Image 1 (cartoon, helix red, strand yellow):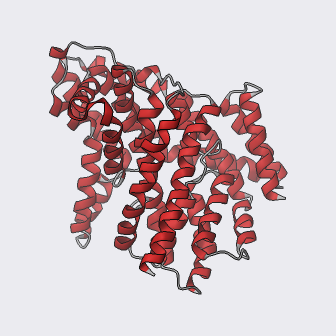
Image 2 (cartoon, one colour):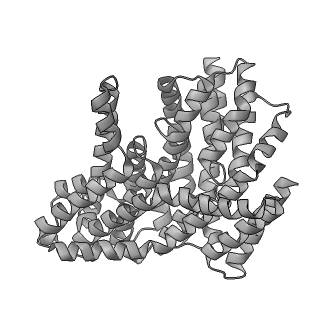
Image 3 (tube, rainbow, N blue to C red):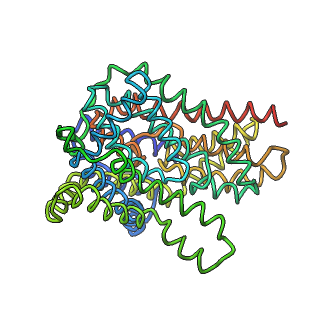
Length: 438
């Protein structure tokens, strides 16, 4: 019954947005309250869940998204994006540019949190799209597929790292297996899949449309790349240093602070204000005006993400995710497939990959202890399942839709299908590895 209620609520949400033309944020709030009532949550708990879901979701994303938008806006306005696009195009050519961006997404996705990677790389994608008049989804989706795979499969991302601990797996072995599985999954969901969706038109947000600047006035290539990718360099550096100084408590405390994504984005935005602003002849007032405009542009995106967090928390507080997982325990299937299915169904119903992964871990861990399945492979199976069919109750779905300015139908045909390909390819890779490593 609980699954039926969740499906009905998701259907109503889609109808309110598409047929009823209701604002997406308002639709999320309405359906969140409705879901809580139908799932028999007490009235005060419904309101608490809505507030908690919005607060927790925005608490982890608002600074990253706003600061990322500021950095992206300045990268576009200063001509740095134009310079980067020119260098990439000259280096790889139009034919291989998609692969170049995908590889970039994979490399930066290993140390970078998904939300940071998304808002950091979207301006680069759009600069290429606008300058060379290429299909936005065709060019951008492979890079975002790479970011998604690293988020779901690979430590040190939150869910895989937590699963490694809960399953008693090895961080290093899981990372090695994950890399072997991730590469073919990204290729399938990226360059190969996007060949079928070239016809889908997208008009990305105007805030990322760079104004054409004379070549002589563009910032240097080194300045453009270093400033744009400074968050990547900082996170990579703090991760490596944290590994070497993990026994030095005082140094580790400083590194933990410096590795916080919000602080890294703040440092990057302040640095960009000088390197792409003042050093390029802009006044501080002009740079701050660019930053202010960037925050205004992402206001509705933040509200929509908050709304998706409210619905996710209502479903989580109702216990529906555990009910679904418990109902699957008796399925007569391979433990790796069972872990994947549990995570996949919870992901579709609840929306959060992290919630899906960690909820599944609590159910599958006792079963794993009774079997001979490699725990490293179970981490990857659950991680792959947690990416299955991202749709209207997932913040990532709305970030992609709003940034690329797509219809819900086209977002499902592109983003949701890409995530499903990643999940299925991940399971196939896990099963193949299970036969090889025995």
